[in-house]
Image (cartoon, rainbow, N blue to C red; front, side):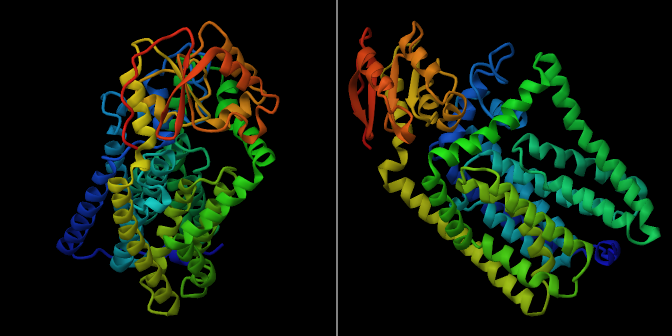
Length: 508
């Protein structure tokens, strides 16, 4: 396959001062937006990961100790770093350098693909997507961290391909491989960095004979880099005495089962979330960017080039990764963002109609991010229900005794994290419970046993998804617990053999 664009394109550096001023201003705006997010309550996944990270230890029942979490180790490690401080929102602060890296990598990749104008448009779009509340980008979740690693690997891989010396090319490729392989260690489906590296190598190998040495150097460096994170994970598994088969089940196998469970027990909910993803992807400009590239980007001067083929392949892979997720929450859309940034960098500078359409999409992305940030800020400042989970956790923290434990029916582990309260039941999320404990045998054994949680917070119906049709959990809860409060719309139960001085109800 010929690769004229990838083979011959050389980066055209913008004036240093102009580029520096542009990036400093853009990154300053990004830091300002992300700083406002750090003052907001943690969401469901963030609280659960932080709760897991705080108790992470070897020798437990599961990969990270006492809780079942189907997320890769690099993500939990990031939350473990944030857990070094007692401030829960530290994980949001930790996300800021990742987002800045995302923006700078977008600028670099866009410059390599479309010159100075491509770099500017790509950086603006990267900043918009990485700060868009409609994509749930205000959260410090696996999709955000992973997308930053994928975008970084894109920039490094393109830098490796365009490097002038073999030494620089190999070094850039090693870094690209390491970043690309680290991304699926944050979110399993984020394989696009590895796909781009493989695509560049194959395009070079099957192109001109003169490109084959370059392809060998990039391929060797990328492979070496990709092996580094894999080796570190292997060493961790060996040191923790975790069997690879067990790790594979928790991180990969169980997710296939969860996909079947989610679609067999709540198909209507999943279809509603698919519709919501389409709406959010449209209003944020993400799907218009993707559609503009797929419909027009391959008709321009780059038609048939390796870069056009690879960008299309990456977008299709991103769509496939989203489709395989099963639950279709808003952060899933972030998987498309790195490839969309490449599409912007390659197409937006073009003077034809396709470039004009892409520039309109870029303005939509930037405008939607600004409006979304302002609206979400007003909501968190004026709508008490936006703080319901945190207020419930704070009330529990003020009402509990030192050794109390809790369980949330079903999900919402951020309540327990805010309350600094462990759970004797290992499944913090409803999807994991429905997958691994579908008949609630372990849940009933926990609530009826000697290590029953002190508190039960009810945020869903006991028979949600038809999981307690026989009423066994309902009867057990009424036998062993009594309802003591209604906090922010959540019924709170206390074990009947315990007495606690309850805090005043919070303002919700």
